[in-house]
Amino acid sequence: MIQIYFALALLALGLIVGSLLERAHYARIKKRERAFRDFPAMSLRQIPNAHEVSRASMRMGSVVISVDYFKRFAAGLKKLFGGEIHSYSSLLDRARREALLRLKDNCKDADLLVNLRFETCTLSNGANSNIGSVEVVAYGTAVWYRNDQREDLPPPVPTATRF
Amino acid sequence: MIVTNTETVPGMHMVKHFGLVQGSTIRAKNIGRDFMAGMKNLVGGELKGYTELLQESRDEALRRLIEQAQELGANAVVNLRFSTSSVAAGAAEILCYGTAVQVIQPPPT
Figure 1 (cartoon, rainbow over the protein chains, first blue to last red):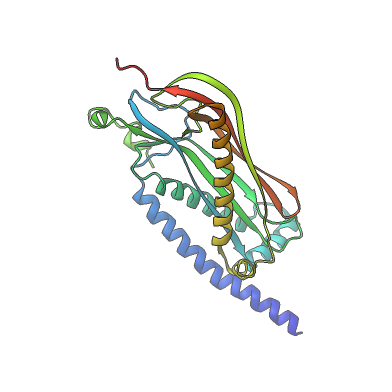
Figure 2: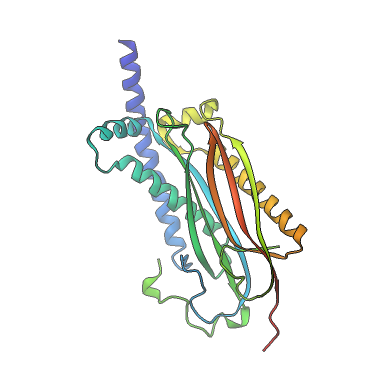
């Protein structure tokens, strides 16, 4: 009996604290994404216009995030029925956005980020592991334009398509 | 050493090509023994210890790649890729590979 109460307590803890933490994390992500609205990151492999480049260097950002106890339990149930497992899609979404933001933090003074790539790896030791965590690395090439050309050329992408 | 993950180094001319260079490191992940990570797993969120651990291993792999490129006489590595594979339960290999090249500043036009 005590074991059932213990498991229920863990589930409740995961549900309450986990969703609070997730909401706070999403709020932080959105705030930082707004701050980076004018710094485009793109998966194009070449620089999209005729800017002359003074410097280019690879940068990366990474994060390891795990799901809470309740979501892991819910995902286990959902596996019986199939369909989208929302608890894991929000985990990966958070991890990717956080990794991209850290990458941008690492090259704040650059003018453009090209050839953005994501690499994901799971840290759990197989299916029966009780740890559901994922690592995401975002990496890309940061590009600095030559100073004398920054002003007189149009922005690399039209403002409407920036994020 | 200039490292990029594009095919060329923007703003530079490629003059010589040295072929593939790589760097790798294998780390034991130690999941489950790490008490703090286990606690953090109840409520979810970032596992800072593991973020740092993997960041360090990736830096180490990158350092080995750059060393190898320097030995060849290259001054840049282009088209860099990262890749992760698990070699055994609980251990992961972090590999980075790229093409070592020599680049020069283009002559002023």
